[in-house]
Length: 317
Image 1 (cartoon, helix red, strand yellow):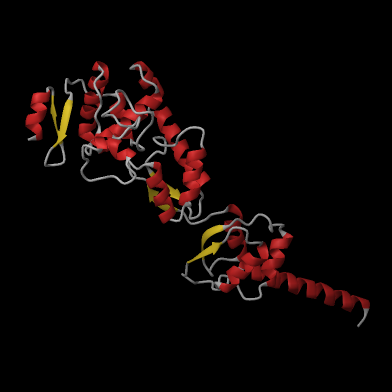
Image 2 (image 1 turned 90 degrees about the vertical axis):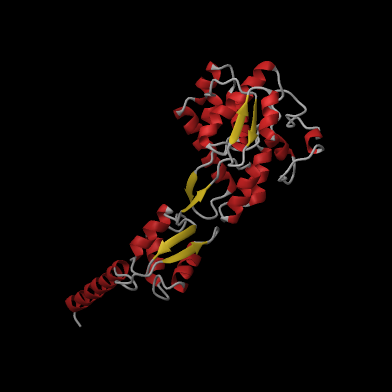
């Protein structure tokens, strides 16, 4: 074979390899597959191990050296992010790598109910595999400022194994954003309270009032009591002291010596007793103008309000 022939052969070979390489990149394992698989890339998994996971789950072809070469050529070894991904054998190599580099992981909706304490939130996050309970609680306890009251109850979209630090940042940031939008601090100052005092009061309202339409009325009762130096006497604050809440409190419970015991001590407790929702916070900021000093839970789950102790005793009967 002369020189021209050899050159033609080499160029033909290079062209053929290039065609095969490009074809392998752009053509998936199963072009028309409707299969979607949740593929978990664990933290600390390197690029080689990620390819092994994809091969094992039949997202790419077995012994896919081209996929490995492509990662090296594009210098993506350290850019592939861990997490849970929705992948399909109908995706080509570039589409798969794009997802892994961008970290387009599966997100799940998790709803934090209004009135949950940070301990209950930690348990829920652990159950939903979002964050470890003990890590979340340790961060909460080590924080300069208590998280209780400021982990805003809402529906969040987060991936599994999101982590305690990330989740707390999202929830605290959400509170700050809502506080700005609704002018919590400004409204609190207008009525002579700090934001923290409002959140403390809102947390008690959250636990005492089941229905939104009652919250501003419950709020007025506490405002009236604070104004005349009367103890708040909220059972919800006693429940917060107890390690395990009780269905019915007894006289001994009301005598527990704690700054959170509003049967023993006047004024607001030292901190929030739960994480209140927006309705409760707004009720704390905007109480109804009523003369009520007492309320008792009625049979229908709603409260009966009264202005005098005599009325209150009748309502209790």
